[in-house]
Length: 146
Image 1 (cartoon, rainbow, N blue to C red):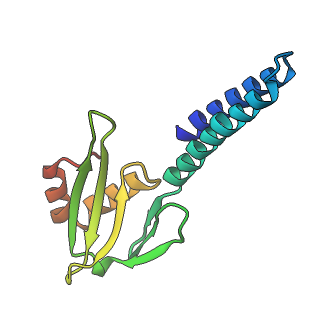
Image 2 (cartoon, rainbow, N blue to C red; image 1 turned 90 degrees about the vertical axis):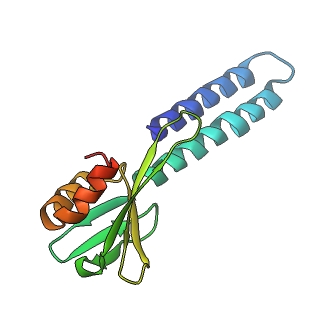
Image 3 (cartoon, rainbow, N blue to C red; image 1 turned 135 degrees about the vertical axis):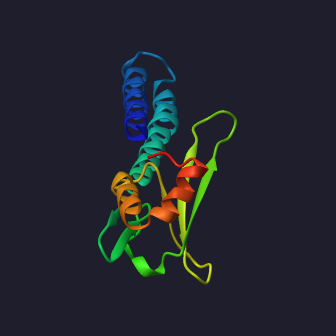
């Protein structure tokens, strides 16, 4: 979603800037610079932010989980290390609500955090329902979406 928005803003900025550059206005070059800096640059930042958000993923296997956040590398977490699952919800000013699921080990060390937008989230939920039903029941009572 953010990739599309960023691409559209950058394209509008590029075409708007080229239109100003090709016009007969005296300040066409400075307007072109403005369009490039703010629209193309801002659209590029939104595009990169969208890539960062969509890069998170989780893969569930029988004995371990592979978790990747942002542009980082995959981190392998053993199933036996997951002791507690915690549900988190963030929303500011009526905007979108971000829902997270955090796994902790017995020593209360954070193992991973996944968000509902991660690729593989649905498979993780199915995995939790099958292999950790008591922990998933606690999360389901707290309101984590399936």
